[in-house]
Image (cartoon, rainbow, N blue to C red; front, side, top):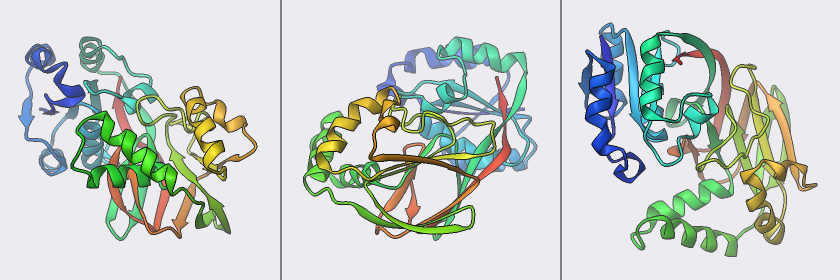
Length: 280
């Protein structure tokens, strides 16, 4: 049995009309309500595979059910950004993605596990625990305006009060303290719809890629456009490192991963090699 979760509102609903055809193309399946709980129950009940049709949020929910189980996951990208499917090298066209799933090929890729006061969660793309997390928090509190303008205003507001945050990190057992504006932990390269914040990340190398930015307000404003290509890592105010386990403490903020709110710091992020069996 293939357990399917589908989000017709993903990507502002631009693929909603195509969704019935995609489900028909997939063949026999059980369509589940959205969220991780129904998928966990399906996996526990013996599902042969899970298919997530939607954006990064839909895929994130599916990861919570399949991580570490060996039950393969198929991804049909219907969202705006689709950062995780792109980072895993999957087809960008929804029909081609279903065809790849039906081919039945699998490969093992890494996931990152996050442990903290919220419990345990998993992510596949990037965890943000700096300026971008603050922007997400502010945007989520705002009731106006709707759409992308909300994030534009949130960015402006956070830029106006920008200050370095004091972090206490433990990198593979080695502690350090530092001030930084950015802190992103990547299993794959991009977040935010193709922003290549961790351009060297490889979801098969057993390592997390970490990007830190100690730059001030002016430097951050000039760095932001360079993140689209990954050229920001050449700036002297940006530092990158790799680790299998990273403990993050210090700032009073919530981190986000795969675009979803995870929980408050402190957290421990661990790369778990081969935790996801991917249909491709």
